Length: 269
Image (tube, rainbow, N blue to C red; front, top):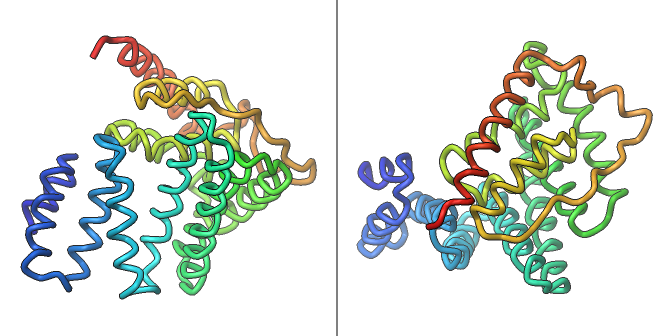
């Protein structure tokens, strides 16, 4: 277990999968190991897209035994979204539409479970997931739903975040998550967080970074046009001139990372 857990931390997901699988052969009822196996498959999709279906299989097994455990629903929503992106890139619009709708349903289930918690972090998880829903509505072409969810989420997130988090804490979260995933070479997972950041504040650095990640992941997909936030909600989104120091640092990191990824994607492999 310790070896497998360390392998996941080091990004050696296929090694972890072998160990978790061998443990489950001896003890198939070990739910904690099955959750870790599903998670390893989910991250290993950056190596082999076939692992999407293994992750779905394992998470589905977990849900049957532990239906109130929230994590599988979040990851199943993200998996449906990522498979939808691939279908959209292939021109399979109807199939992509079905996958996007499934993603929304999984996210709704995750939100319903997280809402039971009374901690501030539960509230923040609910709001973050609403942005993920907004991303999927936006992909489906429902700009109104995406706009409403984004505007309310930005406003609500500020009310449940510590003041020291700055004027744009939700944008900061999505940018930080994107950078963390890219640094870990988890490009699939970076997609949805880059789109979340784009919905909140559609800055050119985000678009450039998304395009670079799409090249590396070999998915010919691009960002859609920015949504329009309702006028009475715009005060909750600070313009560039008022951004916090942390966001200024993010911008520098985004520019540097975008340039680095652009060079990487142009190399012959």
